[in-house]
Length: 423
Image 1 (cartoon, rainbow, N blue to C red):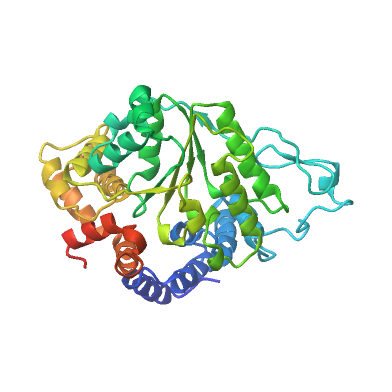
Image 2: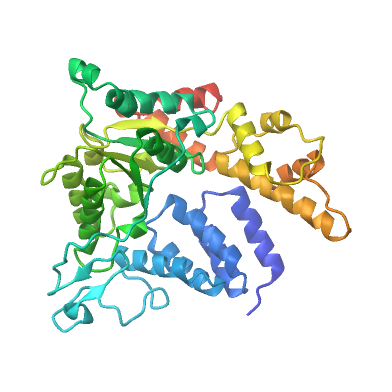
């Protein structure tokens, strides 16, 4: 049944004023879905899941919204994660799916799951190689605009010791352990991880939560084990875990005990208890490092944290130029000037701004016989619509930097916040 547009606009305004109110945003998404606006509902659910990837209610709603929007693959992914994390609603998870395989279940005779592992004889799983994309990135750190501190730290931690084995042995520098990239969403953590793999000349495997979590008992641990085994066979290989706080969430924050098994498996694989991790480099990314289990950040594991900040002026200009390179541009577009007005914009925000400006120019071109190039006026109008998306994250991060900075783990973040006069 159609929803009163006035009600929707009022709730949307409230959500815009209080972007961190998850319950209100999900309520808006529910109303939008009932009103037939599935795509808009899905966008709101995606924002919630970016900060709370284990929210079963959001996964449930996301599955229904994705189905209605025709994004069947995304809907199935949300269903699987919802069931893996807890009991989803009947709309999110088919009632015919059992909670765990039994002797008389279809799984007993063998089932091919999404990652290519087959269940046999109840809970036992064979060791088939997971079906993941193995990339050989052509980009290097030279292709990353800005982020000089991040690139320097990566060079000291990984690249320089690899290039200078004699010096590494002289100083007893170990290549054990991994690096945890953290910072606001949309600031290029995945991009720099891929560039680091290209710099190493290594294969690159990106693992998301849907590549690990599974509804079947014990299957998530087997999936995780399989990804590490694939990386060892492909060595040198950089294994990148996105949204690692969803896989390695603090056990005190977990609502379901099944997640403890995933963390235990993760720790065992990082330690290389039953295998040799030489040639396997582990990078992980999170927007919420304070939610990552402390055991994952012990020495020899993800023991180094690296803050990935919003792009600086030169980096924002490079992103603008890259996103406008193949579009018709007017002569009055001053990339340097536009970039200077985009402080607090993430890399994703800057790219979205270019899309918005292009849409405005396209809209004007529809009513004429000529193509209207993207002008400075289009960017000016687009900046009124596209606002920085990281301010809510900065407010949350401020509290942790001020009151939970044990051992100086957030000193870099605190320095940035003070420079911006946020604290």
